[in-house]
Length: 109
Length: 113
Image (cartoon, rainbow over all chains, first blue to last red; front, side, top):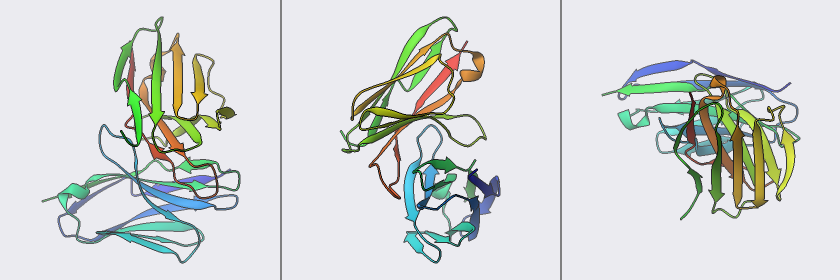
């Protein structure tokens, strides 16, 4: 069965303190790994899709990387507005999507 | 209007009531989904519709009944719910196919009294 494990469950950073979120996965035929951002009271907002090991995507202070077993979301010099829950999901050969429980990020000014 | 729109945003109902959640997507996608999100748990997929046909039902209790009249609209009919059904219900849409991301609405926060 496909599995997605995100760590840590919660992360508190000072503004400007760079860090990484981890998404470990097992999947029967990876068709895509997705990162989402979710703010309180809102639905998940799509950030990135990664398709194969070695691929990287960037958007502002965020950079997502992918290996055969895990993905990292690197946050460089975060700001308070980066505070949110970050969700990782994998899609398998049957186009089924499985989500992790998320990492709740808090960036303090 | 763009994206995925869900109504109502909040719903409080008794266990004997009947209500419906509505979802509309303006993205031209051909697949739509219902998810349940409970605190500190991963999103749970409930139903999938591809081209208006239901292709997945993840052992969801019959008190939840989906309806997809066309590729832009999705409903979730609720009746005789239980307190453990209180959660955020999210609708999503995507273009069916390899590696296509799902795009979500802002959900309906459901509370069962």
